[in-house]
Image 1: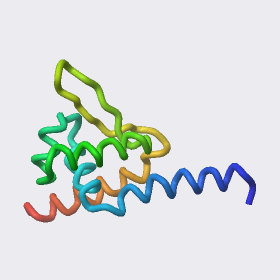
Image 2 (image 1 turned 120 degrees about the vertical axis):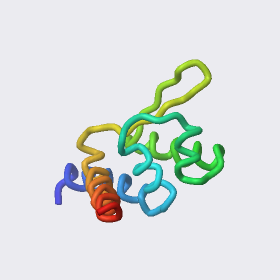
Image 3 (image 1 turned 90 degrees about the vertical axis):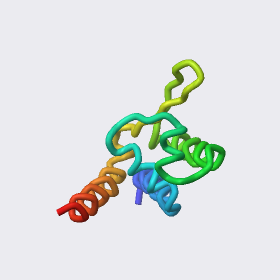
Image 4 (image 1 turned 180 degrees about the vertical axis):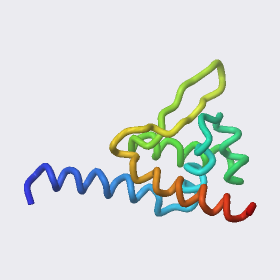
Length: 103
């Protein structure tokens, strides 16, 4: 394997490792329909603001999420790039489960 493939594998492993934690998967699902403030995300995943913020920070560091500030409120959304394509699989699985639950 050449260095480029190894670097790509390391990048993919870093993204995948984020989702070894169920709270972070729930955060991804909470953001499936678009941008939300931290307080809404914390309520959706039933976690404290502090715990949610720690997970959001890690996901942002790994390039999965981006944030923006509006006055005192911080909003997060999913980044759409080559690094987050695997996230789309998790979102697709979530949507399928949600649809099956209501059919």
